[in-house]
Image (cartoon, rainbow over the protein chains, first blue to last red):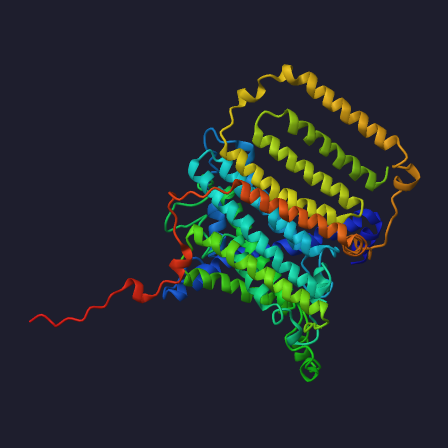
Length: 354
Length: 199
């Protein structure tokens, strides 16, 4: 141990910070990738039970090694590059969807101050990154040199841009209530009790945010881009093996990101629902469980993630024109009205969230 | 050379290269992609200048929305690449003239009194708690509230004008009325008939 500390103190300070940051990145990414792998497993299991089936149960005890088997299978598959496709863009496109999906996690506070980068405009940063993710879809569809992939990329791209507007407006409501763009400060603005969470005064915006989050990640019931029961697949028809897996990794990472953001912005993130009830939080051992902490954040994220799977098992797919109508004619006007009401409330000094 | 300078030269080098490739590259999709790289690197330079709000908004608006629509249009149009190269020599003198005028104008502006080296070259450094967003908000919504609101209204008028100018009503086009579809009741679709059982 002394030997290790001696080595550590020998390293120059600049390199030390780089090493610490890299370790933090690894500490975020590895659980994230594992969470993605087991979300696919959870999805198949949960939808299986909802449809009175067992789901995957062959690989490992109760099927628990299924995601690992899937990954190994995809790793060993050949990556086919279609003839006359644009091979560079074809190979860059999956990375272009994956990188923003991962980078956005750098500003997420897991517990009080526990985040990689505590930046002022964290909320905007997340919004900007999620909007960049659409390039992977469009370029992947275009570079495949296939009309099906191209048309599907157009559809998926148009859907993602349309819902981004409603999403951005919902976030405007949150930042008006919190008075800050820093994600940690947004959570601290919700502290007090369960009733100071933003979900109560901003319930409409919460609904809009989560619905447009589902549409943004191209998940059921808005998954016209994939539509596995109608068409083969969307913009990623021509992708195989690991390139295909990267698209799915990004999709699931985005799902978890949206769930995490919904819990941060509207349900107080790592704030405990029992805060303010001092007789519970001051208990000797259980107090740590009832108090604030990362476990509440993970629990809330898992709760919203479950909604994704539940939606997929419950709702029939929207038709494309219905998706556009919902986004432009219902969700966006709703957010504008809600923001206007919020503005009046702030102007008149009636702020229920304070 | 400090780390910050290194970052500046890195980003501005990428910015210049992608700018040049945007003009010279033949494939229009590559040109649009170089423009995206341009926006990204200039956003990065703004962030190093402590203008993080502007930098992120540049990515959000231009990279995230405007360029996506651009790419849509470019991908859907089947542009003939040879046709684009025609007349390069013919238009070269005009292009050079325009470039020269712009260069002279920029030199005049930068050398004039408006850009005093003392005033602008030395960037002030703020502490970690300085929020560019807050500073911009103070200026836009307090100091220059009326000009800002007037600009916003002018933009709104321009949007409405653009929509009304390009709106074409096509009475022959077929489309579904979703409002009607959503509001449909069982009585509109199903007719229950009571009849005697067959014997």
